Amino acid sequence: MSKAPSKKHGLNDLLSVMVRLRDPKTGCPWDVKQTFASIAPYTIEEAYEVADAVARHDVDGLKDELGDLLLQVVYHARMAQEQSEFDFTDVVDAITRKMFRRHPHVFVDPSMKDEFLSNDLWERIKAEERAERGQGGGSLLDDVPVGLPGLTRAVKLQKRAAKVGFDWPDLDPVIAKAEEEIAELKAAIAEDDEESSKDHVAEEFGDLLFVMANLARHLGIDPEAALRGANAKFVRRFGNIETALASDGRKPEDSTLEEMDRLWDAAKDTEKEDAEKKG
Image 1: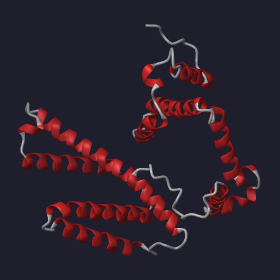
Image 2: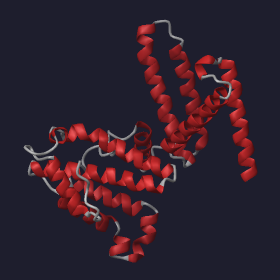
Image 3: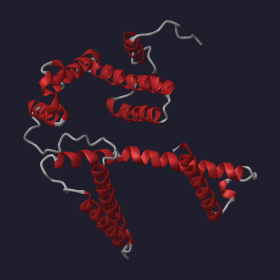
Image 4: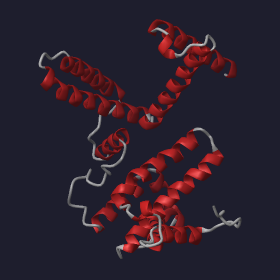
């Protein structure tokens, strides 16, 4: 197997690699058959892996993950070029122009900084961009991407609606709404008709998630980041359960729920003690 050259490669090298991979005759069969739609899930996955490396403070990993994400941009651009739509230089040109356009307080008039910090300038510029694209006559929510993670999109939809005053003034009614949605979910779960109640339960569960995203927004919390933190905590504490059982030569399936609950609480107490020591 041939080894990659030892020189430090640049962006043009990566673009050339993608041309080779996509060559219908001599390229990689898997890469050749890919489309925008088939690659899109990988693009999303790579973005999440970048976020994961950041969350783990893994700088070396971040370098690799950013490269994987860059490859996705190159991939989409190459497919577009093959269809004579646009190429990578058009992508770079578009984002550079957008940065100039959206940061007039940096590139045009420093006195606009306060307006930018209040977010009014940013939103006005984006509204002008939507109008130029012919999207100004539709709903205020039309350009909130459907492909975003559900909680993230919920927050963006709520923020957009809040800009025109469709929002609760403080935290209390949001909490009250969350309690109301929990009650409605309980009622849906208690329905006798199992077939019809399943859809109703899913609907009410969705409503609860939506209001919880709104609660996170009012608290100034990123719900996706909060959930990732909860996931990491679960993995960490369950790992402690596995370690404790392994010391006796056992696995979780050899234990009981009661025992695992005790080990979970022990792991929780240990984390609390460690946090207090550090604090």
